[in-house]
Structures are given as structure tokens and as C-alpha cells.
Length: 311
Image (tube, rainbow, N blue to C red):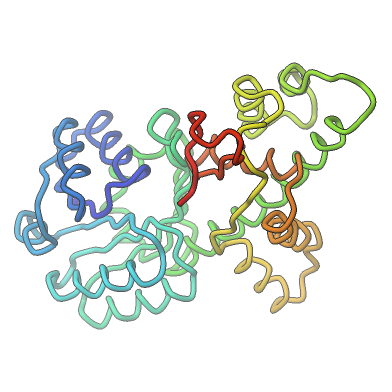
């Protein structure tokens, strides 16, 4: 089928690639960066130079997937598209928007006869290879019409219509809150191992634990990769950002009076990482770089040693 795609960054570009490679889909793609547009033409996508051209190129009923940063850029993109789209067209927001914003976007779209789907998307830079886990909120008819797109992007059983508008980003928000706590648990464990009196091979231990242990996971596989490249993670600082979802999940826990101490402490540990370096924070920074391509801050002595530093 046919879909428009807005936002061709590290995830968006790979999603276009997967749609073209693994499905019989026509993709009309836009990004303000000309190099990003040129890159997706190599996958057989049709690149356009503006949202106006994108809307004019698609056939009705049109569907446009946006994969841009949450907040102001998402707001502007949706507002611009609403001036260009019409009745029974669909906007899919695959970014990490706050669920309350997505509910508001859905109302604005509904007022103009445009369908809105909030698609929580997990998979990071590995999604091209293994598929994206997709949590979609919206009207059943709109989601069912685009099911071939969702099923091409996702691995088997990796797509679910979770509920009405807003629920997709709500489920993704809680998913990311759980991720915060998992990262912190691995960080603390490896920090204890690194600090003890034994000279331990952390790469070998991470590999060992992935062989049938109860703590085996994809994150632990990524820890193997990180320790293999840099056994002491000496090239990066233990500086860990938070992109919003952990805070939003904790706010929900407070509003719902649900105790979430692991999430709370993992979020506060990220705040602490910006004041004082530790090996545990290096583990979290390394894992976020592994699964999501998130920028890391290089240690000053090793800046320029091949590590991508955050601006």
C-alpha cells in the first residue's frame, strides 16, 4: 500500500528502508534535510521537498506517518498536515509524544475529519534488522486499513491495537519506565562486580548470564557488545539523559497512587549521573547507545577516540 513518511532520522530512515525491503509499499518521504531525503531514495522511496508536495503526491485516502521529536516539532508537523489533509485521511504519530498530547491531537484531527493513530514504537536502531514493537491507539477502522504497514514494520506478534487514541503512547510510556528500572538494575550489578576485590571479566560474565540464567535478556546481550568493545567503558562518561517518558510514567504512578520505587530511584539516579561519574552510569550510557544509538559523552582524555559525543 501507499504511505507518506515524515522524519528520516536514525529510526525513520530505517523504517522507510524496512517498508520498502519487506513489503510491497510505496513510500513518499519528506525530511527538511536533503541528505536524509537522498538516502531513502536508495531504498526505492520517493523523496519530496515539502509537506505540500508530499500531500499532493499521495492518493486518497492518504496516510502520513510522522517520526519526529516529541513536543513543538510534532505539534508544528501535525498542524501543517491538518491544513493539507482531508476527510478520511490519517496521521500516525510514531514518536514518543506524551499520551495527553496525543489525546489532544486526536481531538484536533477528529474535528477536521482526519483519523489519528498514536503508535508507540520500540526497537531503536535495531528495528530494521529485528522489527519494531508497535503499540497503536486509535479507531479500529483506521488501524485495520493500515494493518499491512504495521505488520511489515513489526516482527511476528510485534503489533497490537491496544485501545483508543492516547493508549498507544501511554503503553509506550510505561514500557520506557520499565526500561529505566531494568537499566538501573544492570548498572548497579555491574558496578558491584567492577568494584570488588576480584579481577573479573565483565564481557565474559555478561555472556555467561545470557546462557540460561534468569537475568538473561536483549539488554544483557547489548552489554556483551559494549564490554567487548571497551571492557572498562573507559571512553565514555557515565552521563545519562532522560527523554521524558520515565518522568511521565512516575507522574502517572503518583496520580494513580501506585508505588513505583524502582522507577523513581532509577530516574533520580540519572539526575545524579550528571553530577558525579560512576561505572554504573557508564553501563546505562553504553546500553542506551547500543539499543537506541543515543549519543554518549566522551571522557575528556579519550574524546576523539572514535566515540560519538553528545553536543
